[in-house]
Length: 322
Ligand code: FAD
Image 1 (cartoon, protein in one colour):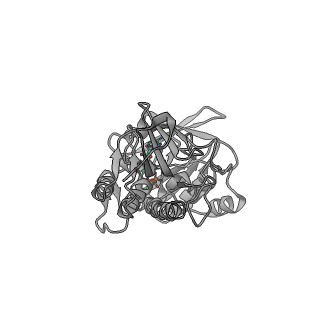
Image 2 (cartoon, protein in one colour; image 1 turned 45 degrees about the vertical axis):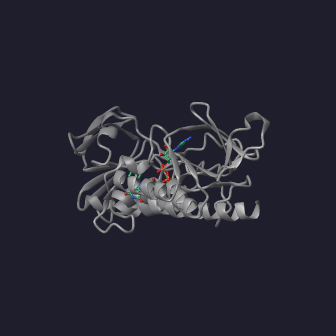
Image 3 (cartoon, protein in one colour; image 1 turned 60 degrees about the horizontal axis):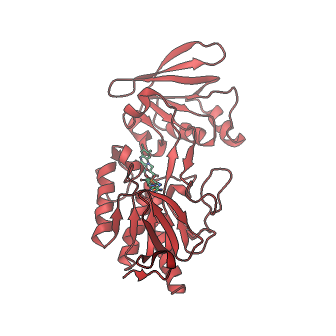
């Protein structure tokens, strides 16, 4: 159903109705909706991290429809199967370049192959910043987390640490006091970066103890987190703190490398700006969904919801630009 490309540079190429870049909950949900609307989408997953961030986690207990929870990779394979079932062409490839202003839009893959599309959905997600410690990746999902909303529930009556001093660190810490016996906030400075209101709330919370001027040297534990080593950067002294969970809240980087020169980007959090409540970007025919546009909610279900909106926005756009 793809149309033939009327371009001298590649007379044999097809023009797809829509190309989706990214294979997290946003990309696959966009694909399910777009394929059920007969748009025959092509979805590029990335060759290194197909399936998005939920591939890095174990139990997902807050995605509606799974009362007993579901493992992250299993949920993503269901989404992929559902997208394929309705005709999405899923390709395990990296998009390395896009020309979004061209008509049709040009999408270049890692092997140099070019694809053309009338509309593009950017669903490339966001990369949580890591501390860069050895135990960190080995203990991800075993006490190391980047999401209190997702994992706080697993730590009832246990001592936890939150690393960071910004608004999201304060939000995470306050949220975690609902479950934890105690929450240590470890911050490398002697004052918070967070807004006054968030800082005041956290400082007034009796369950939160601040450990200032300190960084984490090590996360310890064989198959789950047992403690962390904390270094006071003024004295150099290292102490071990017994905690069962470490929530890392030092920021995240929306994956906008492909598009940041042409799409409007929020200069505070680096997300792509969309014309809410739609998913339209500043370039006609280019839509964005999921954590790459969302600096606040960052949940699988909210990413999926935006993916559905993006596909419907594409349908409307293509209908209006036959
Ligand atoms: P992502 O899931 O990040 O997917 C984006 C995809 O696009 C990636 O596969 C990436 O490789 C790909 N991509 C990027 N650039 C390119 C390119 N150039 N070419 C091709 N592909 C590209 N949320 C919950 O609701 N519940 C939970 O229990 C939960 N647990 C979590 C546990 C962990 C450890 C983490 C890190 C996050 C968790 N989250 C959870 C948050 C949730 O994973 C994210 O909110 C959600 O995955 C965002 O979806 P997305 O589709 O926007 O992006």
